Amino acid sequence: MIRYLQNNFTAYNVDLPKKNIQLMILCKQKTVSLFFLVLLITLKMFGQDAHYSQFYANPLYLNPAFAGSNNCPRFALNFRDQWPAIKGNFIAFSGSYDQHINVLHGGIGVIASADYEGRGMKKSFNVSGIYNFRIKVSHKFNLQFALQGGFFNSVIDWTKFEFASGTNYPGAHIDGNIYEYKPIRQFDAAFGFVGYTSYLYFGMALHHLYPIKNNYLNIGSQKDTKFGFKYTAHIGGRITISQKMRAEVNAGDIFLYPNLVFISQGKFNYLHEGFYFNFYPFTIGAWVRHNFKNFDAVIISCGVEYKFLRVGYSYDFTLNQLEGTGGAHEVSLQFTIPCDNEKGNKMSKRKKMKMNYPPVECPKF
Image (cartoon, rainbow, N blue to C red; front, side, top):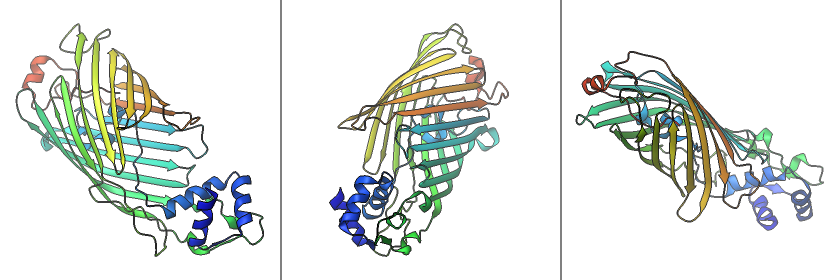
């Protein structure tokens, strides 16, 4: 690693004697920040979106076609703390609102997300609007198609980095031009669709239709890198084990939701296999996340639902070689504003049959 850093300091006008570089790397703890900076500006990198483990508790982030899927107005808040035991962990936030509007024959939604990497060294923010159009294919099968467009902003906070010029080693100097950074601000777009019946749901989404640049520095020799397209495919179902009344869900009803979610972005591919077990109003879940070579994590989740309020928590147990990371904590909150029963979830079977756009029967966590 020392040899690698020595070679790359010269390429970017960093003037340090070899002995001082070795001392800084071996003795100064904060040099890890400089190491990440060198990786950022010298390697050909592909950006990756923040990853959430509670997929259906953050529906618009998973697939914009879920906008309005609950019919009644819905708010969702999500927070994720990844690798809390490591200094410079990853923090991600997400908030959304969506509802179905009959005159538009579909749903609308707004989602805002932000993530902080390395204690705020890199900050990204995205806000988007969504329009979702529903098609009634048959009496029991419906399709939803969605377009999403918004604004993406990402910056690097150089005050969080410690450079060689900030040490007490003699002869240390760094070219001031490296501070001439340029925030990334540009348009972002996505597309998705969802098909569903009362017991089966599936869909696909494609994010970053307009490639997002990932070049923060005004260095002529650095080529623009880009966020890779993010492909998401998901399928799941609802198995009724015990239900007192078919018209609505009551305390003590039991359901099983098996699910499969595949996410691919750039060189990263993850397959998520798991299930939710719902003993209403309580839900527990277990998932496995892996690529095609190694297992990455086991995800355990739990949640509770009371009328129009849902709260969920999940923890990722890391299985890869990154030991001592502290896994990942994730909390979700959903609140649905009560609306006309013919537009909401609690409706009789007869009303569902007459309704043009029944809600998507998908898991809530």
